[in-house]
Image 1 (cartoon, one colour):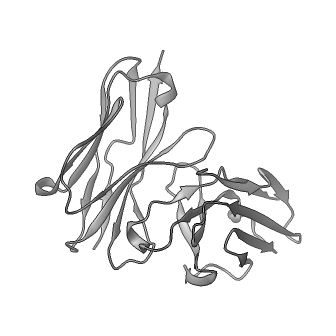
Image 2 (cartoon, helix red, strand yellow; image 1 turned 30 degrees about the vertical axis):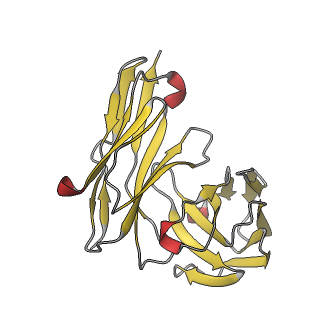
Length: 115
Length: 115
C-alpha cells in the first residue's frame, strides 16, 4: 500500500486562527516531510523528520510548527499565518534508510487559503 | 552548485504523438540520484523513476522511457503514443549522496495532451 493520506483537503483560515494539518502513512517509512508548493512552482522543502526526530528545518517561520507523534503520523500546526502562506501543503514519506537515494511518496496535499 | 534545468515550460501535443521532456542537471558529486515525478491537476506528486549516477542503462516502462546520459548531464523522459491522461506537470529532481533527503527540483514542464 503506497499511500500517504492528508487531511483536510481544503482549509480556509483567518490570520488569527490556529489549525493543524495531518498526514499519515502506513508503509513503514521512517522519514516524513512537509513541503509548501505555490502555483506553477516546484515544491519547497519545509521540514524533514527522520526516525521521529526533526532532521531538517529549512528556516521556516515559527508560525509553522511541525510535530511527529509517531513514525506513521506527521502534523503541521499553523498559527497567525499570513495571506502569502496560502499554498498547497504536501506531505511525503520515504524509507529513510538511504536519505538522498530514497524516492519520496506524496500525499494529495492540503490546499490552504489564509484570509 | 547543484541545479536542474527543465527548459520546456509547456508542451502541447495531440494525442498519440510521442513527446520528450528534457532535463539537464549540474552537480559536482560523483554519486547522485535523479528522479522524475508527475503532478496531475489533482495535485498529488507521483513518483515515476529513480536513477543513480552509476547506472546509465535506459529504462522503459510501458509507454514511458528514460534516457540517462552522463556525458551531456541529461535525463530525458519520453512518452510514446501520448494519452490525455498523461496531461500533467512533470518535475525532474536531483539529490546528491551527501545531501540527506534534500531534492533539487527543476521548474517543471507542463504537458498538455489534446484529444
